[in-house]
Length: 221
Image (tube, rainbow, N blue to C red; front, top):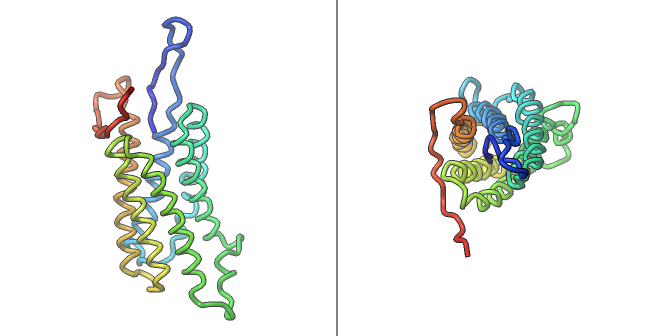
């Protein structure tokens, strides 16, 4: 999800100016929001399965709005994969925030005594497993990118499936699959930060370089 910092104009060799690289912004927004929620899922600071409403602000503005903006800027620079990923996960965080915001009435809608007591867990499980399927599709699209990027999407796929299983199995708060999903989410966040830093550490700014491990490329004919 990165681009060259400068490019050459089509007219001669005059520099065309700096090129927008929204990748680090989108990855950082995703990483921090995921990191905070995942710490709660493993029981760091609050009991696993306890209140996570403190994530709501992050999910709305950093994980949500900032990622969607990054996705729009990825369209601008012609990166369809980055645009799809950032815009989609920005929408994921906004939809997650909507679940937590009482004004949307989502959680109260499942509190009726006449419905299945596990209806909310089932709905959240379907919600998460659907994002797991989408993330798996994106992971396939990274197999010729870098080890760092592909690993992030692979671990994120596992994160969604473990979190979904915790809800679908009706195991209650703080269950084992949710804790595992939280641990995998922490790893995902660290990988996202690593990818973001690799895109930020350009020769004009620092001497630090982070290897990302290029994967195989298509053979030219």
